[in-house]
Image 1 (cartoon, helix red, strand yellow):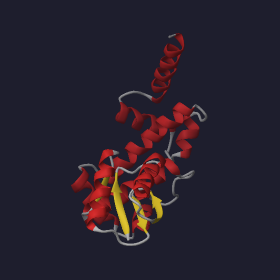
Image 2 (image 1 turned 30 degrees about the vertical axis):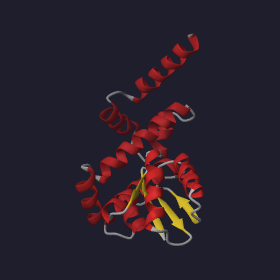
Image 3 (image 1 turned 90 degrees about the horizontal axis):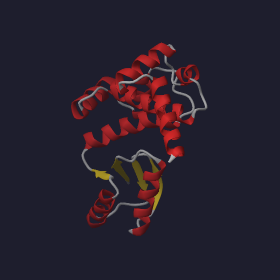
Image 4 (image 1 turned 60 degrees about the vertical axis):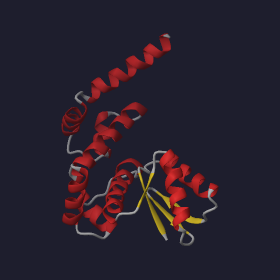
Length: 186
């Protein structure tokens, strides 16, 4: 039996889910982003208790098929952008379609209808969040980040960054440095 959990996007979230399952004595086979493989079916009472406990942590147990599908799409994108060393060589649409075994047009229509943005917009937002992370780590320059995230050029990355955040990547870095200097002066 699989349980699908909304807003489960990090290692910390996985650990919270694991903790709740252990508290309730619910044996599981594995926990991944957005999904828990249970050892066996759980009762309605156990499901409701888990739902309540997860809500306290900002997570939500999903029941409806469209909500589950949206979470699967989001998890594939988050995993692809934030946790993979290399982005896929194929088109994102092909990659998502292959990972979820659904026609991309169907996935795209459901996602846009439910979320109010396209899958492509969601990918861009996540890529820009990843750019911010990489800029904060200060290990790669903009050219290397552009290459790592498969942007056609540094200019393309910079334009997309500014369109989403309202500031340029270099200004974002300057703000970060000023904040650090300010904290050190305190």
